Each structure stands twice: as C-alpha cells, then as structure tokens.
Length: 144
Image 1 (cartoon, helix red, strand yellow):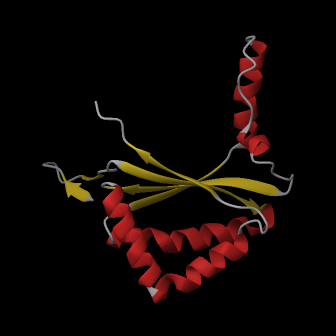
Image 2: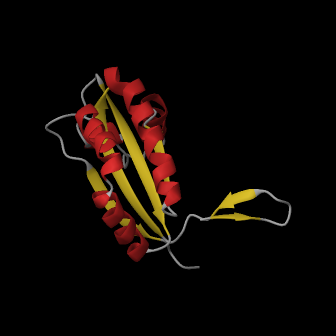
C-alpha cells in the first residue's frame, strides 16, 4: 500500500476499510504492550495493510468533556468511563487499514494460518485486561 511520488517521497494509502479495536490493559504492562505491538507492524505491512496504535490521553479527554459541560452541552462522556476502566488501566485503540473488506478477510485468513506470529498474539492476549472483552467494529470509508 505504499507508493512513491514523483519527488521520491513515500506515502501510504489508507484504503477504504478500517477495522477498529478498543481494549484495556494494566498500566504495569504498558512497556510490554508497546514492544508486542511493534512486532505486528511489519507483518501487516508485508500483507499490504497498515496498523496503528494509540493510547488514550485521559487528561486531554476529560478536558474536552469539561469544556463541553461548561458551554452548557452535557453531551459527552469519557471513553474510559463508557468502557469501565479501573484507575490502574489504560485504554488503547488499534486501527487496521485495508483496501476493502475482502482484503481484510484475506489478511485475517493469512494471520490465522501463520504460526510464526502465534506467540506474539498469545503474548498480547496475556497482556490486556483479563475477563474483559475487546471492542471492535469495521468501518467503510465514506465516498466523496
């Protein structure tokens, strides 16, 4: 999904389908999760997809909620409240970009058959909060 422009700069095409994951993890597992996630990036790139990870900024999120309330709009709440996190947990978001839904299916099929990344996946599921489910959704890009 990379292409080179005339100037030689590499850009990434994000595609038309996004698979999104939200999950919680103990703050004590932060560094281990970061290292684990870095191992998935080349695998996805090799299969023509892109993966990105973000950690929720609780203070920034709360500032947006507070600002809305001060303006008389009580229409927002923090995502960590919506998914019931504990004080010792972090909220992470994972975004997987594909050309389309069929490409997503193909990549997941390859992932399930690839024994070389199985230990990374097993480690990941041991690092996120046990007893809580990951939240996921698939999103199609709006056409202009």
